[in-house]
Image (cartoon, rainbow, N blue to C red):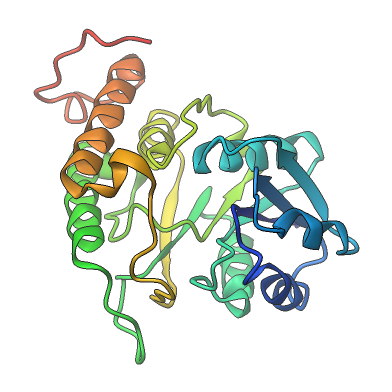
Length: 253
């Protein structure tokens, strides 16, 4: 399959050259979405050869970078899109595992999981991130697990492979870190087939910031739930009764 590896970046001058060098060993086509970096990342990218770059003039958000990667992969005729982070939390040598899983043609989304199995040397996740991930993953499984055919263990991992024919169906509009909420609900609404594969759990910076109010764990969890609720409302005609159980709609957008 014609495959694009997309890497969203924001102020990753420390890592970007090393990550790109390692990714090139496993991918011919690389897209970097630079979300308004101000630390010299943009200058480093300008010196790189044989990569595609989308640059935002200002920092918009992780969700916009992912959406741009989706749009670029569809527009340019790729069959498979792989997304990964640029902070050395995702290992490029795991890219072939996503390609192999996609070649089986039994899934539309191959989602990396840092919790599917314990790997020797895995880092311990920051407590608030693990707690929120586990809580949201459980809530998503209760609502949409039967629709995507997968009992997820990690709903927030950004290391994923997508069939572009599947993501072309989605209408995501969240610019921030809550985009997984929209993605999973719409994946269920369109009956996308999902599987998980294990990936290493790596945390290079235990204190990495989400920015603003989202650095408060309680606020972050509430925000994720708000976006999830809104997306359930928006997609309610395409979802099952189980997915909508207890949902009070009134927040159509």
